[in-house]
Length: 456
Image (cartoon, rainbow, N blue to C red; front, side):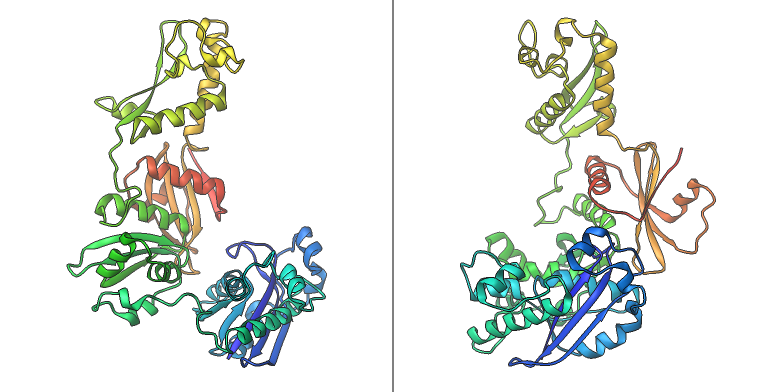
């Protein structure tokens, strides 16, 4: 049996968004045999542009049941059916996240009608549901409403099954390459992996860690290794793996930090990125005899601790410095990127204000150098990042003090923190390095966290 699902939500991120409508069609492989549809009160406001897209307003869901009130009905309706949806991981992740908040582990076999349609009906102009329905003559009246989208997906699924000999063989997420696995690999353990966020480890016969990875969904990511082993390196890694261990972190940021730390410490055989932690070149701040601030690349040595940031190679260092020079309008002579006499090339094309020939004052130029340096630092000197925990009863915490990463840990929701210094009681001490700083900065720039607490 199959359960064909479509949901509408308050936004595209399953970590921060909530479900506003769900529709499910039970299918026996020939036709729909049952259905279930309900609006859901998301317990948060629906953005205007989402209401404009779906037609679902805050007024419509005000008296609708909350997810926990229909959760049992959803589980009973789905039973052991294969979960089918168009762009399946969108719907699956939202539903899994809702159940996770209730302390229930939601796991299903899945079929994606986007991937299946690409395989069974290649060469169509688009595989988005609306355009696919037009191409294939499938009725779809109210696009972006769960019931109509699920019904159209059910019709599409019937066409896919018919073309595929009434079988879902080959439509499930790619089958694992069992023939490549080591004879000692426990297949049941593989299938029983958690779908939580965290870090995973591949081990060989000698109980050595040969690969470390991180994922928002550990089982899904590990499966991708065993499904997509096409390169010689990937095949050898799967051949050697006899055990898989996992560590749930809850927060993706903690998974990134943990993965980076483990790779640097263990240096697993099949990890390439971050494996080398030798930083040969540093960026140093000096002042010349005229008082102009200079950002210069030098080999790391006794002055290593004084470097503003460090790089593994000279090419990497020059590439970064060129970008900063262009971005902040710095002088190529005062960044060591131009060594000829006279004005630098950037001045000649009117991108340098003349610090190279004394035309720009030291005060003006040095102020822009400081602006560039602030780009290398965190927005706050000392802060705590509060994010998802491993369970609904805790939060994760990452601590930075005086620009230095101190470590991460977990804190119960009922803990009362009187002063920022108390955060240190909840963290496990970790080493700071350039990769860690980049991970934290990038995460704060791109991801939504629960809370950032700055302090002196």
